[in-house]
Amino acid sequence: MLEIDPLEDDSGGTVFRDIIMLVLAGFVVIVLLLLPHINPPAVAAKQSMDPPGNVMVEIRWPDELDSDVDLWVQAPGDTPVGYSNKGGNSFNLLRDDRGHLRDASNLNYEVSYSRGMPAGEYVINLHLYNSRSQITAPISVDVVVSVRRTPTAPARQIVSGKALLRQVGDEITAFRFKLDGKGHLVTDSVHNIFKPLRSEKS
Image 1 (cartoon, rainbow, N blue to C red):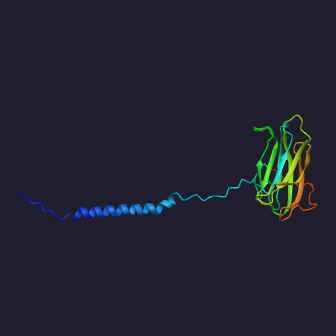
Image 2: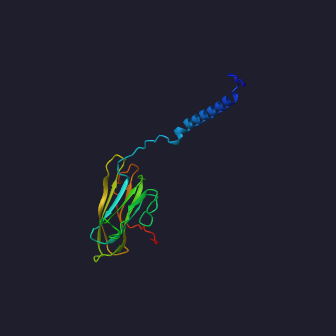
Image 3: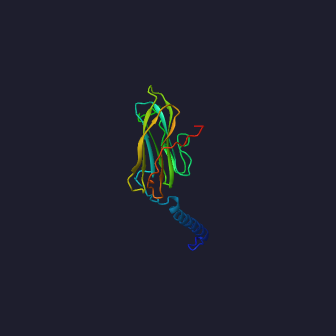
């Protein structure tokens, strides 16, 4: 008759269970250490609802005219910004209006905004690129320059006026003016002596 000893050695099964438990515990520790890195808490970015731009240049011409008027701007020490070069160190052209071509709004306007307000001379030019209207010239263009000195301050107009483009291909200087280091208009600095901004390739 075969007798079974209740104290028979079961060390092989115990070692296996111990190894499995150690591997499982190691896996749990690794998961707990990696958990914060898998989905890091989102850093709350400061979102400002204030409109962008320190220096804002806007032009507007009659909406009924199917004419392409181009805005060119130049900040101190920067390259000219217009339809063929839409961004510089300071300015960006935000809207290139081509008249009624692919324009859902039928509003004729262009806008450039700057990042920062370097002290020095700013140049604002207009160029009559094309006109598909029966009335081709002269085209009266409203030009407004505004400044926002701080992100929370309201934009204030510093220069505004009208300019006439007499024929297709004309480029004129609407304004030249200087800002000081705090974004204030320098007294007696506004004039419209012509300075070409549009490159020959444009």
